[in-house]
Length: 490
RNA sequence: GGCGGCGUAGCCAAGUGGCUAAGGCAGUGGUCUGCAAAACCAUUAUUCAUCGGUUCGACUCCGAUCGCCGCCUCCA
Image (cartoon, rainbow, N blue to C red):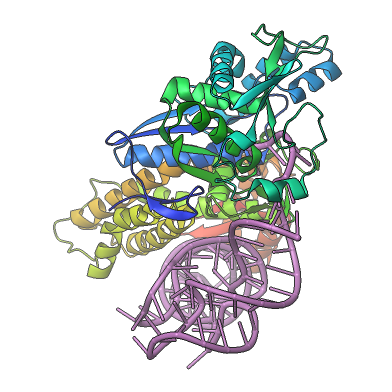
């Protein structure tokens, strides 16, 4: 089996081919650190986290580079607002980024370069572009001459004529072509500056990724990723810079994930319709956010809503309940007397779980389909467990334990089912209990009273207690081992 | 205006030339229960925005139409 994924550059799904055997070199555009991260950033981080984890699970070596833009107009503007040095603001929000992403359980990339640590490399690259005739100095600025790069527009599939027609960029007398973009900006008073052959200034946004990817991955590498909003102009400009300088293919493939929307409108800072990761994590377990994010294919838009999160909560809990149920089976409690109750069709389904998940993931990292397989498998495992006799056959116990193990292994690619199932359910219950108006001890006391009533067949009072608890969102479950309770969902 | 994408059951969401159109939520029936709940079982789209075309055969390819979204300025 081979891994296929959609390459924005070709517009088609293609088989993964690496420049070096079994080694994927991946560069992803990270954040500009001037504010807290929102769910869109979570999607980006988690999408590539999942991709990297899957590639590694499939025995690829992965070199994963993700940058931080820590010098930029927005950072300077925000720093001025807050009356603090831009570098301080930038480093503060890099820390906040880590705080959020660590909570989400995202693995750190292998290399995380910061733009300000690579000004020398950028100057070098700009210099090469000037020498090759792809860039020119105008006043204190340096611009990239888009007309010098014939393939300009190949990623975003537009040509310069079309772009000019719809251009909303302000006219700049210094530019030879209005689409030319800045590589080096002459500094204004009070801004962070670095010395360069063109005077004091700072780098443009696009050049940093070209310079840093070249340093850590070379002139050509396998996959470049980011959000769909980066296709133009950022990634288009990166191609122009890198290929203009090297004359070689920059990234073989491009992966772009879709946006998170709210009421079908793109979540963005400028619209103000965003929720930060910490907003979400104050209400939901990190795995719920992960479950939600992976319930839709990474290239499709993902609409955020409370009901979608509620759905994810229930879905994840269902999987955890399946695992918890199997975890409670005593592995020693088998009997040689018992014969296996397993059906061939079920055995086949569970044994093919991993293969089927691989098929889904091989097909453009289809996490939504993989989740479907998780549920399908959980259903079968639940049914088998439910039908188990007092003392089951050893074979059946092993089958269930292995099934749960495989389920966890595969869910881990998406960062799901990572904690002990019973612990997760306990945390989840605890959290819900905390929102109740009634203390657990009171609940236990009422259950105790109801137990006595039921023994005496005092159904009216026993039902009254149940209804009373239900009104307080407590649901009772009468089982053979007594009554347990949980907090009503939704 | 240019470019890209989407439209699958009440909702969410896979599938992308051919056995029964995954899965989840919600719903319905059943088992269990004193009655419930939970759990488990079963069930819920002759149909994939609309209309044409290609094909032995299309949700899947092509064209048109309608609707929605994104990019074309910073943005994950």
